[in-house]
Length: 479
Image (cartoon, rainbow, N blue to C red):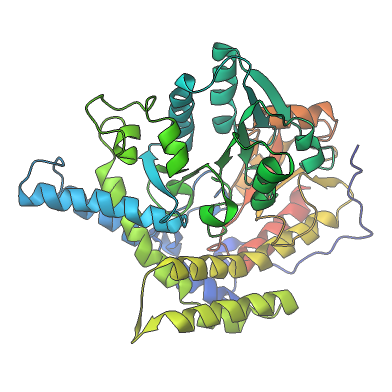
């Protein structure tokens, strides 16, 4: 069993007692430069300090305005031939092209849209019903959100497939040794979480894919990845990782309430006879064949508008100067951002391409790291708290989705107390029911049951150091 985290003393951060009078430090000014793009952060609204980003992020104004403008001026059906219909189709088509670039899938596959990652994986599993045969084997990662577990479990039950679970260890890790013991020549599906929405740990996806295909030799296995909890924090790179399928939700990446599924050309071609859209839709048109019925067209307009917000995020020269003070690794990252942006300048603007996406997410990582370090170090300093996930703040191994439990207090009581202090966070299993059940069986959550689950604090780049300092002062009171 993983031992309790014990440190010698509390490392209290200096913070004010009221979020409405948090000082606007030089460091916070960098964050506030981005927060001005979000109506949510208008201080006159007196809204909660938002640290529930793993459930869904806030939308920048440009996304909201783009969706509203589309509905005001371009709210027509596609394919009718007249000019306005043609323009509407261009919005939808352009959103697909943008998302292919966003995941770095331009040369290797296609994308399909849907209302949620859960729905996309459910549809994908139905598409595989005509491909898989009795005796084929399916492996489901225990760290998965139920979205990437239930569809494959149901399919296994319905089709007579052999179902195996890649367990999470008692130290919260997922080992290749454990995965290797499950793989065989009959493995057809390996469904994994890139980042657990509870643990926050980043799975080395490229290594997992190579392990499945090369070291074990499961050439026929499809690696299907839930990237929902990874996508807000790092640039997706399906070409580098070699995955077959990768899905994420745009509403957790400052976009509209939609989701994106990437599939390689080979993977889409494998299920062409099982995709859900009507028989007269050409099977070689993978996106249209997978997307049953009408898409959320105004959502596509919102997805396109993310381009503009990412440009703001990528313009990080000031960020590099102000936040490159947390050690050598932080300074190196700031230098990378600065060099990437310098190479993209065209006059006074930026050419939008894959390099800009990568620069934007390097900037996001740079902004998130001080938040992660402060909260992780504080939680580690308490002998009455267990971090549920990696207990270090290294950006290589985790994102700032940080869960914990208290030795004596219920997770729901902690959350309720933080509500009263002006925070939006949550507790529970967050649809990772199987993972929380397993952790309870290991006695890792102290007195909390599956319903109580963990306290989860989830931040992205627009949260500020002052918000975290105030959170720590509140946790001192609550814990």
